[in-house]
Length: 278
Ligand code: NDP
Image (tube, rainbow, N blue to C red; front, top):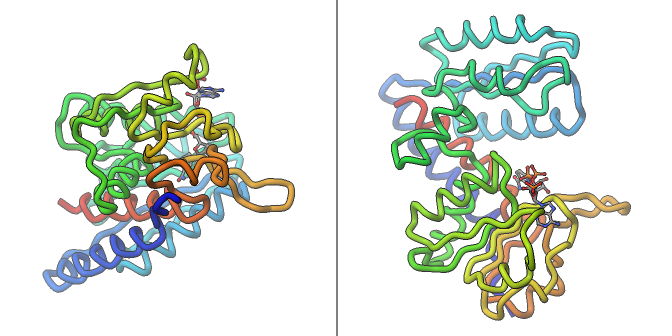
């Protein structure tokens, strides 16, 4: 049976480390501040924003909350971001996505100064990752690297397959694995013979957004399987993109859902906030 990679415990450990760092900064008179903007009142977004603010409070990061009405215009949002960009006491700016359809997300992401882009979504942050320069990295893939490293799983030289090529998970994940000297393949909906591709993986990262799609036929015996997906079934139970019960018996290590990748995303956001003060 596989080792279960405990994202809850690893994220708790990271948060404790950050709490200590923030306490030292505070003693030096430096306060980390994150501005969190939510437009509208989408219930899922409200839960995510609430969890981010809770994590800030726990670590000692000051959070400024901007809860804007659904009808807020793109122009009004850009003005607020402009103000926050110019405020010296604000280190990080986070705009909760998705935004209402009348606001162009790309435009908003580009408006955030890259030095305050704690989500790592700005094209400059993505470009920096691509050419190996310092910059903020998208939180979920950064969290997966931490999960692997802190579980003692070697990445260098391994065959890694990432299923999914989204801008926030798949692509940055592939770039980070490459930075760690893995041999990386990215698969997507147009990939032929997906099972043949995924069965090559020593480390398989799945971010397809399809509940329990990855069964044991997709996995090489002894592989490490990282499940990014989050889905809620009819009974309100969470599951991932991987069929955990089917796959766990044949792999060497696996992340559960919940309690795997999910908790790491917020921990890495907090890490980016602490880094943003530099
Ligand atoms: P997207 O929908 O943006 O991307 C899905 C990717 O999977 C696309 O690249 C798509 O290919 C590919 N894909 C879809 N179907 C197939 C298929 N049948 N075979 C192969 N590839 C396929 O999703 P995200 O990357 O944003 O998220 C993926 C999952 O991770 C979701 O369940 C999401 O909820 C979860 N998630 C979890 C987070 C966490 O904190 N744990 C954070 C972010 C996301 P193509 O490009 O060709 O369309």
